Image 1 (cartoon, helix red, strand yellow):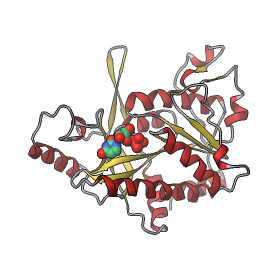
Image 2 (tube, helix red, strand yellow):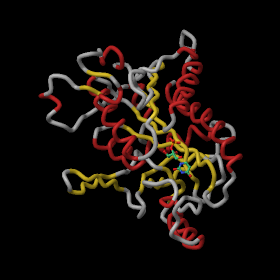
Image 3 (cartoon, protein in one colour):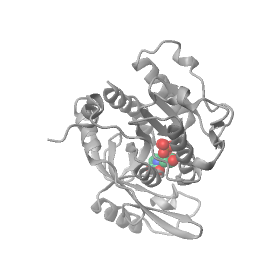
Amino acid sequence: MRSSYSQRVASRVWSFTVQVKNPHLDTMEEDILYHFSLGTKTHNLPEMFGDIKFVCVGGSANRMRAFAQFIHQELQLPGNSEEIRDICEGTDRYCMYKVGPVLSISHGMGVPSISIMLHELIKLLHHAHCRDVVLFRIGTSGGVGLAPGTVVISSKAVDHSFHPQFEQVVLGKVITRSTELDEGLANELLQYSTELQDLPTVIGNTMCTHDFYEGQGRLDGALCSFSPEEKLEYLRKAHEAGVRNIEMESTVFAAMCRVCGLKGIVLCNALHSVWCRDVFVALQHRRLTVGQIFTCGTTFIH
Ligand SMILES: O=P(O)(O)O[C@@H]1C[C@H](O)[C@@H](CO)O1
Ligand SMILES: O=c1cc[nH]c(=O)[nH]1
């Protein structure tokens, strides 16, 4: 029988490092992590971050601060959780909080924003000699055929055509990378969710779009070039292809984690079903589920 991720970490059966895939980095005298306002010469990255085991990322700065405070309390760390310091205070691009072995970082909205953050985060973990790190994207999403508040653990991230791939343009050419996520880890998290009360959770494919409005079939943007029927037909096809939620970062997150030897998990709260919208219920569930997702994270840590 396959041992679980937590068992393997606990027994140190295996250990993995963070692999940067850039031969030029070794030749550089200094690496400046510009959007974090950190650098290899100005900061002792191994001392600051060497014990990191979990990195949790999400779009909004306030949410990731609240998440860090919650973890601080859950882990009963010394000091006042209200006073946790933003490590990236030298810039207002992203915020970053360290609470014990957990790093909580905001990434803004969309693929370009999270991708810049991930480049610098992966280099940071590499420079800090971190091992056995798991990355969680903890976000919101639109559910596809799900009750509002359902948590979706992504089995894979898919593009607008429901393919598990991320296309990156490099020097004018398209490079395609796989966006499959760790199946064993997804199943393990699902198991944890059954131990928590009132936490409807499913494993499914997560579709990543480059737009919140037309890209996700919304009829209420400034532009809309399709009918309600066409929208429903597209969402029906998505559902048939295993898509259970839609957000805007998972493909590049999954692709970069895979290439760099990091375990990546995408956990999203389906704020509202795209098929039945109710903003107030959605916001209520968003609050609740952030706390519940926390519980998942802390179950993982212990
Ligand atoms: O992490 P969050 O909840 O910010 O991610 C989703 C995807 C987009 O970035 C944003 C759209 O509202 O929410
Ligand atoms: O519907 C939604 C909700 C949150 N984030 C998205 O990208 N879509």
